Image (cartoon, rainbow, N blue to C red; front, side):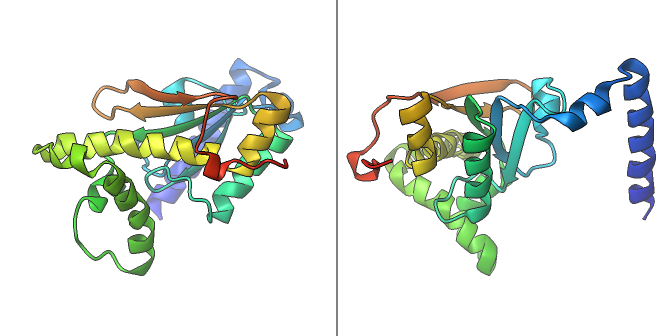
Length: 211
């Protein structure tokens, strides 16, 4: 319980210091939420969106899960996406992975992680299958893991573009812009690796013609 007491104590210190620096910070923040960015990141505790981007509370709308996956049957993710796009009218969606991701590393093994994690990691294995030739040519395991991290981010951005939520916004509002980033745990630097914008081509199989 000591860690809980410590967190609560640190929270009070942070709140007091914030008010001392900006007396109207919380009253202003409580009135309105107008972020321009939806962040889909990994649940890894070492990759907090606000801290690594230098942004303040209220500037980024955040969803996190293991290995920053965009799965078309994930109601949690889709509800966040729908709210961010249709209610908050975000202009940018960032999928941010990180080098050395444990979820991606697990997908490179044949270990049994039991039911739920097996199902989740299967999504990353499917990405591996798409790029099998490239990945199997990499003999260094850390390098292979990091390349799969990058390829996973790229595929998740593509998954966003396949949703009716994003396609509707692209058609009627010409936003959001989609970004694939990878964060470096060793140096703290974000590596932008992929982008998609309104009007970009996607596989016709996934295009909705009546939105």
